[in-house]
Image 1 (cartoon, rainbow, N blue to C red):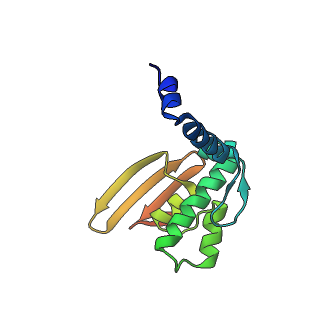
Image 2 (cartoon, rainbow, N blue to C red):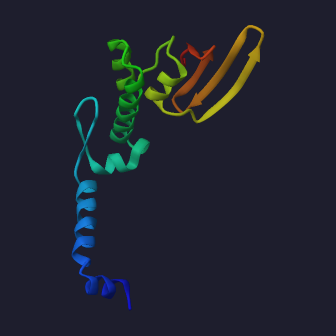
Image 3 (cartoon, one colour):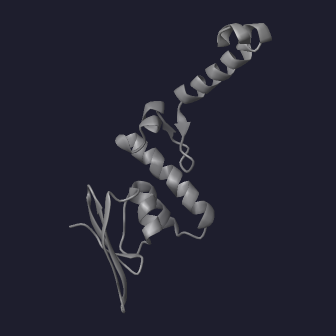
Length: 138
């Protein structure tokens, strides 16, 4: 006996189909940004970082998550992260909120003076000293 026949016998097919339809309807509707309340198209949300709207939605979700554990974050820093900007003095975590994970992390050097690290993104290279952004892309 196939799954469909078994579900019909049990009377569960309508429940299964209703659940499937509800899941599809949720996916097909717009997603709201947790910070701005902006509607993002479902294709962009599904694509994630692969299109501009998807990147904005992903950044907004990362920022909302970050703010749960860092509610004291200054308003101008929140705006910079939401806009996808990085500034000297940001922590590694704040840069990840703004730009996501780096494509490559290279040159992590630990010396008597501290730790330096270089992150490489498609849009530029960032340098960190002691976990703080010390240089922007040129």
